[in-house]
Length: 158
Image 1 (cartoon, helix red, strand yellow):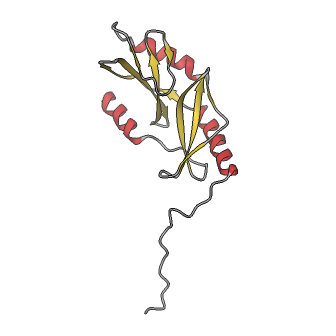
Image 2 (spheres, rainbow, N blue to C red; image 1 turned 120 degrees about the vertical axis):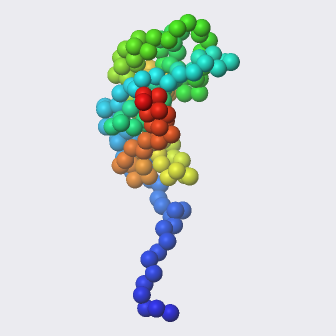
């Protein structure tokens, strides 16, 4: 046996959860929300209606999407992506409304923890709806983008 010390293997199950880390994650989300902006909508028609999503953009990455009700020109709560609508889609009008509503978004003072991802999930509200979640690193310091949605938006734009 060698007298060299072997580097340890990281134990992904050996970490702490604390209210301090949750509070830091909420604080980080509060800072991030000041700099987010809506990206051009992603949409498709389904048998259930039309599904319009407004990507939340931060430093060129999508963090989450907000469902949009084109019939009422408002945001929808998380979990309600479709509305019945047969008219045309005016992306400029959707963007104008979204920019206005982004100014009304707020971070809720609570955190969910997702163990497989080792990340905090911070709910974002618009009026009385939870419309999105921001994913923050375990230590509460860094925002984690949604890389799949970022790729989808980039494919749409180019």
